Length: 188
Picture (spheres, rainbow, N blue to C red):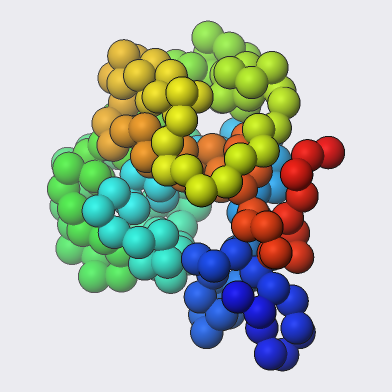
């Protein structure tokens, strides 16, 4: 899909009428991410996507950041019932009790993975020996199956293979820009 303003073609999923979505596509999606703070934020946001569109979550991202204390891991790990109720009453975010509780649960497991591997980045990138996978037109793979299974085994919730595949695309482990997109490349 090509934009009339800048004449750049982008992936077919990118809503050209949503400036935030275009910005996310152009400057974030598919770029290798190694910072645990960003990896945590995206993991939590991807879990909220379950059953919804990424655009819906992305449109609420700033509200999520505010509601979830800028995704500061230690703060989210310490959320108790009063904070859960506050989040459930926040009309600016997705108010799903199971997903909110899963966020707290997943934060604690994220922290355990950090302790085990030195960082969550080391953990997630170890599955590909720090290499980027180039593939298109998939919603899951053996890699997302493997990581999903491992995260579930560790106790995480809302981390099915489709969510994890989308997460891996978002953080650049899997590079999936469409052929024809100005960011497309077959490999490095």
